[in-house]
Length: 181
Image (spheres, rainbow, N blue to C red):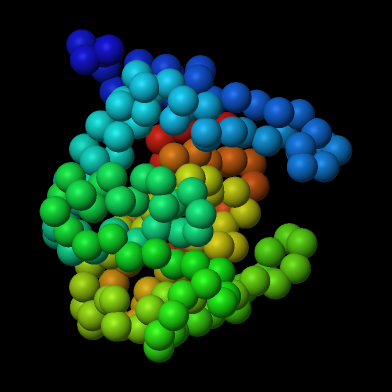
């Protein structure tokens, strides 16, 4: 696949994402990103594409933040390749130490995100990584949490986007997604 175009690589990824109708409840079509991880070719292509994109961000990003939990799969790959830190944003109660937190509303209730307060410094340029941009609630909250920490969100990167849900309308930062449904 090395000789393929970026568009062909994205189509390959899209063709390898498994869909499950009526999960987790009737009427929902669940797109399973884990199918890409069990296919070494797809996973390699995915890594190449996200790292290539992260390297193209200007000015250069200084830290990668991954959202619980699937952002933890892709964020460290990017950070390691760029030789910059990776920091997780987790749900309430899962991180020790002094924390910054933010409450946000989802379509099914409220949630709280937390980040360790000493992990990001003022004015650092941050790339936020997650697997899916759907309604935008969690990604918008992550952006607000990073800004609350004094850093700047350079970009949000999601592997998949459910375009009809208009989640990107809630995000006040540049957004890049690979696979759009």
